[in-house]
Image (cartoon, rainbow, N blue to C red; front, side, top):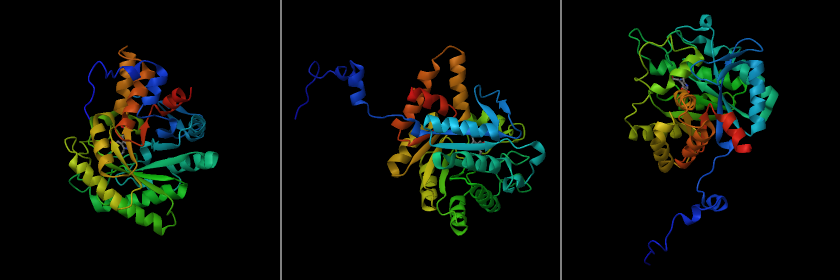
Length: 332
Ligand code: PBG
């Protein structure tokens, strides 16, 4: 069959009206595609704005519960929690991560208590919010992050979070073998229903700066994380990471950062028929806010266009600091 050329074929025909554009729209964004990262801090009634993330604050546990209720009302299905650990509770070995009464556990328990299964709670597994050196694991004498010893601690951290009520354990540490070790421990300890969302393709990125401010690790971190986080040049290696994490029992996988790595999201989605999430990280959020402040674009449109782009690339959902704002726009 031969195809008619212009003027019989006019691709602008279906773009002419709103109803017609809606009919041919290939991808959609809804609040159920959003995961909202929240930073928690000590105290009560406390809101601490994060200077490098305008519009984002750390919340004390009581107010984090209120934010969780805001999320439920907006139709957001999941929160990701990150703690700001007091300096005196940070140590070389990050032992505070294993404290059953740490800030993270108290936040998880309070939110689950208030919201039950109206919302999922995802917890990050990695030691950087708890270490005095800001690295995600244990260091040897030369400052190298040791793999197997770190995995043993991460397993205990994951169990600590599961006991507090976490629904999804999200290892963001990039150690080898941690997903399998955590999966096995969860099964043995009676947490067979707890999911694992693996940060499988996590890159050593320049876009994490504001996050490190938010959890208080920026001033502590010496050097970089290139011996465990991935080289931004690699995509085949991302597929191997995903393959390994799935074989070890991950329920879903993540690509991080987000917008500069949409090709990786697409490659993972095409290679494995599993839920893929993308993390639009702190530096990306800050870039959008800086563009808005500079008058270079309009916030609502920038936010919705970038989030839709993740869906087009194949993501089931996006972790984004704009989640509540975006969900409210989508509900309006
Ligand atoms: C910790 C962790 C980081 C982020 C999420 N979990 C920072 C890092 O790896 O240094 C970054 C998230 C963001 O920038 O928004 N392992």
